[in-house]
Length: 167
Length: 137
Image 1 (cartoon, rainbow over the protein chains, first blue to last red):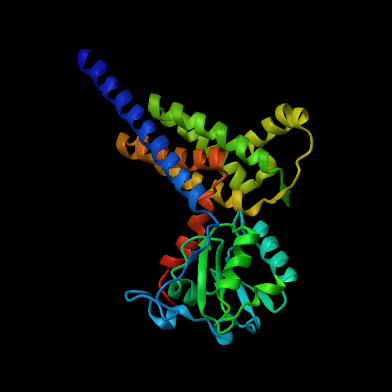
Image 2: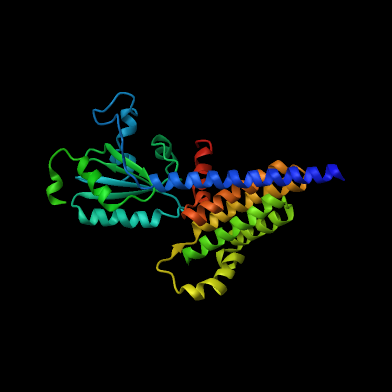
């Protein structure tokens, strides 16, 4: 009887510990997600950058890679899947930016259909957004839904001249 | 079909609470009930999802129509992920492998909590993960 009671106790304690661990882990993941989501980070090592960056081949996307022409001033590339909760809102933001900026185009890629690109570019989450310069160099990227102003700044940062006048 | 996103988060909050009770009591039966709830949403569609029905009849009339709607496919897929994890957990509890049951219940709880509290669909991200680990054709 005593054994059964103590076994039950052990199970309850284990369950409570599992509950607390799961809640703590989920809160930590959620906080990191909230902090990082949509925050565009510069991609280094591709633009005459630092040593230790990704190989150059990973840092440039061509028309052949995308299956669509590059924008004259920049290209926004979105990786989506059919089961992606934030891909729709992200698509709308990219569309707004492209409509506002001349020479900027949007290419949406089905990450599950283009596993070659997904693997090559280390895309693990959807949506993932890449900002390409005029020559297809990846200037910055993010997982999640970026803000319009950040995208505009990232596109401007990928341009060689003071093109920001017409932003 | 589009859904009221608040319904999905309400359902996730109920799932979180149910899974918390599963962990504390170690009840394989309650986890089986939750697995069934996930299965209905994933297989029959979200319009038949039990917690969604609770939302429609008890909560939505007080809130009014949603400001925006969302596609049903992502949360439906995530319910399928929840169904599989919960089913493995049921097997664990039923076979006396309590650790397996608890780990599965904890995983499902973490995903449901992320959905309810942070509007982050962890189950949706599993889709690309599964695609990626398939051997290159």
